[in-house]
Length: 348
Image (tube, rainbow, N blue to C red; front, side):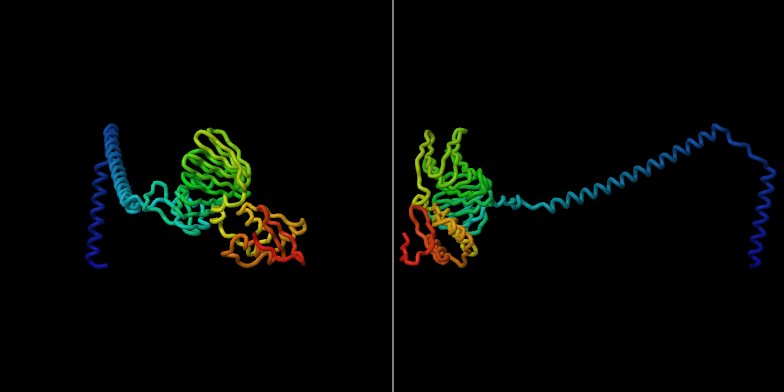
């Protein structure tokens, strides 16, 4: 410790001693009046509350400014994420696929311009509410998503609103719903045809509607009442009348339907199933010489391609390679075992 430090400590001790002496001489100070103390406490409390309120307001303003800044960023960001103009519309659901097409066939979305039509090719999708039109030489076979086969003849205009509702305004279409689809409707200006698991053709011709039933049952609804048509029935519906007639299940009446039918694939399929598929397309029936042969035909599996062959040629190849023989007579394919002494028969 230096001499200077010693002098400073001695001086401080002396000052403290003098202060204590003065306090003893002054004695105890009288307390402040109660009213004055209350006023002082009230003033201090009021100042404290004002200070707290000020800090709270400042915090709220700061939070509001921050929130406003965030909102501004969001408002700026949202237009950046939105597309300019109208954007690309969402495509309608696919309701069918093109199985086969001949000539010019086009699809045009509802409310679209003529320049927006697209040419349909095999395997192309068909969307709900697209109008499918066929030209003077155009035909199309469509496979609906529910499994039904729909075919359009030349000069036709139709659309599938859904897989179960078809609108026809011109030309003709053929429907084969198979055994699993029922209730499909074909709507026209002159009436609605509703199938009950069937094959039928419906054609618009000037001011008349013609319905031909190949298999199953079709109900033609007019004025909230059904007109039932059974296999082999032809109905002609006009604004004033309904005329019923008959039609064969095979023959030239169904020529255009057969012409645009999807190709039959036999590779890996039993002989019996292949013959049934071909016969269904042509309105034929299959009959076996005996019950045992029918069982055998269901077990014979075919192999190979028959692409490019006519239906009767496909039948001949399938039956002959199975070691059997057949004949077509009055719309019936009769399958039998080969007779050792039989001469080959010519195809009709």
